[in-house]
Length: 460
Image 1 (spheres, rainbow, N blue to C red):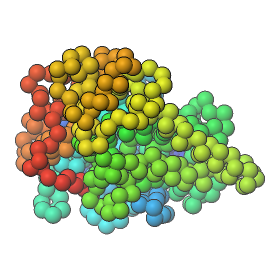
Image 2: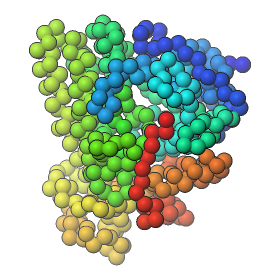
Image 3: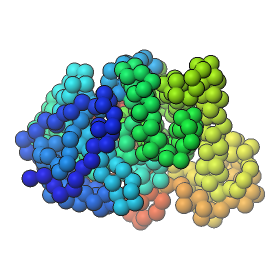
Image 4: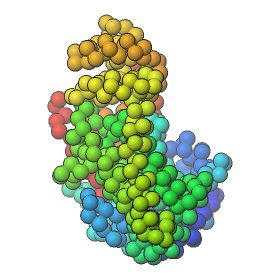
């Protein structure tokens, strides 16, 4: 039986040519593994807790007309004109009590017409990773898609070995990407791009006064987002243009991870051979992606191509200043400082130090100079103290807990073997990242030396 919540399909209805009707592949034994009850309450989706078949794509939802989304994208700099949801389906949209519209999207729900090889399915581990990390990002206050549920399918998927299968139910402000605009331009021309832009403006930036203003708002949203990633040491790992959402949300958690020791060259993704998406490169890649978005909007910005290029370039060239402004404001907050202090911030000796625990160590030392502090920080910290930083303000923005890579791997390995307790424990910890709690010291510590070099995978 379909659930009572009725889904809408405005994106598919208004933007013919950017979706393909598609039914998820039924699974033999859908069984709920984790369910995001607070998110479900916000969206009026509590009834889905008792409907694992709907969350796995095996049963219909009221009013739903599932589609696979079409998009293109630059992947590691190389353009692919036809990507799309190869193993996913947009079930539909829900509207919360405040009038905000959200997509409900299934990942791992079977091959679609956009599939590029593979079985279209997903394993428990990668789906739980997205659930865990996206909830951690939400708790940190960083714009993100969120996971509603992970549902076991009752069948194995074959990767390097047979692994238990699962489907992720994901909620997003929308799934409109830079790659969606690229696909629209190359398959429908300026008119389809106009319709897509009108939809995106109405949904995300209703106060935008022009298409150039819309572009400027996306540029600022991405500058803010990437600055927030950098402030917590988050590395997305696969910043292709099909993985950049127009809404300014973090989307598509594949080979993502958090940095332990500070190093701008940190790369975790096993497929990022050249370090294109290294931690320190993320602002530059965001700007590159936004240039690709500008290319799709030129005909909307001005009938005169030369004038359109000049206008879009003018906006794009503000990205660096916007990013630096967001980053410096965030760093001042992390160090408990007021306006100014740029030189002090730039001279903070972070190289090789644990990026998360260092800021909490500084606030502890500020309260009590006998608290442990790495010797490399002492000379700088003496000058910093003279600026009268606020330790309490620091603790409000510097997390004690992040999804430490070794703990994530332990939790996912246990869950794959059928034990969800370590995952649920870690999830509880990262959902309250700023509150130091007795008995959780191990969750605040970096990986032991025995953990070795860390590599992440896309989970395809």
